[in-house]
Amino acid sequence: MYKAPEIISGSGVVRQLRDLKGRVLVCTMEIPWRLAQESLQWTPDQVHMVADMDKATVEALHETLPPCDVVVGIGGGSCCDSAKYLAWKRGCDMVLVPTIVSVDAPLTNMIAVRVDKTVQYVGDIFPEKLLIDYDLIRKAPPELNRAGACDIASIHTALFDWKLAHDHTGEAYHPDVAHLARQCLDELDRNADEVYRVTDKGIDTIVDLFRREVEFCARIGSSRPEEGAEHLVAYNLEHITRRHFLHGDLVGLGIFTVSRLQENAPEWAADLIRRCGLRYTAPDAAPEEIAQALRTLKTFKDNAGYFYSVVDTEPITEDFIQDTLDALCRS
Ligand SMILES: [Zn+2]
Image (cartoon, rainbow, N blue to C red; front, side, top):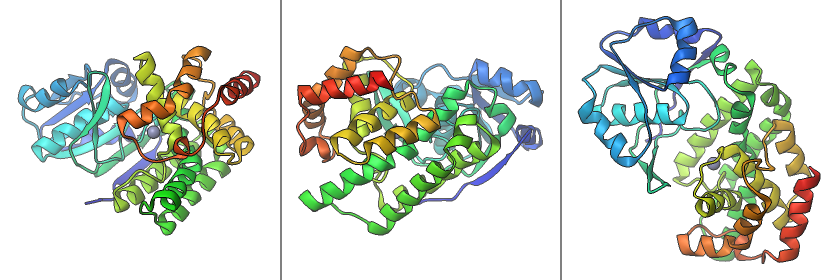
């Protein structure tokens, strides 16, 4: 069942952790822990440094870590997800302190683990309390915080695919939820400059839009409103290269290319992701890798059994790939 989180945001709110009662176990990593301690200066009962998110590692946490009354996740997605796993297994209280807003992990009920380099989801726990400390979040490189905009901007291409699937295959479609998603996209559009500059308002915008998105996706039991073929581009690039990328880079690239394939306001979409500061040229991928990911997109999607999308209706030709790469170069 969806549960709305209590979100406390402000400068220095991380210091509220000092008031926690009972045995406190912190899941963090070296860098976020050091940055948090600059203003926190606190000694909890136990600090666990998260190593990796392999399924076996995460599943061992419950047995290997000492008992606790409260688990605190301080850091990015892996730290929050490790804390979520423990709280889910143990039924204890949980506080999450995201130190970057690059992924929606602090708001979702699922825990992303890796099995042979692919992501699987386990668990089911909606976070109850979040501390959003602006000063702490701004200590991270700005491009990591801007990257969070990708899973809101993706609504643009995802809604197109969802409606397409409904029209062609009869898949369930909820116009009221599509409308709520559209409102989130508009809100991002209005606040793109704040997101780019990582202002207080920009951070609040991302967190609030994640919260709204998680709520309506949970209600219909589907991520259709924010996950369309733009995500397939991201998944295929990671599949082909067997490398891990910043999610915002790849989804940004996916929005750029798929809005063109959909002929769905591609100029507007490119302008939005540019204003949010998404690195949609995917600087860590070679042009040939991007071309290959597009060329094999339909096969990848069919083999992996992913959802219906524009990839099923529009052929990705060599001309399209070349035009898209040229357009990326000019950006
Ligand atoms: Zn995503």
